Image 1 (spheres, rainbow, N blue to C red):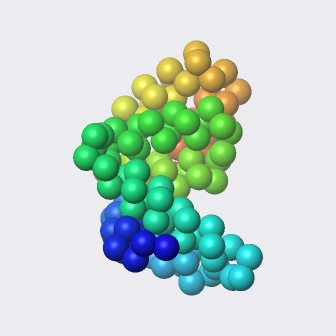
Image 2: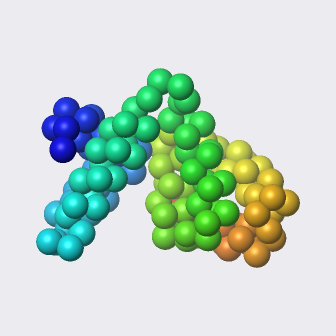
Length: 125
């Protein structure tokens, strides 16, 4: 493990997803899931999300499309919140999901629209 990369990843992860969520995920890790939490924090957040090539906003838009394509509603909902924190608007999320309807299929987009709508309601948007 690279401690600097982990620390950088932890900071970015908290900024995007919220410290409360990230702290709970890490604290809730056990012997089975602890290594996964470290891997995701170090590589996804410390290496990829910290790269200068794309803004966090752009990375959020990409994640929403990819998570829709993969039909991963739990992660999708989490990343809707992250996208809002990264400056993505409700209308921009709608446009991403409309595009996924064409390229990923209507059922996947419909599920993501439902999930996004729930998150917006929870966030008071």
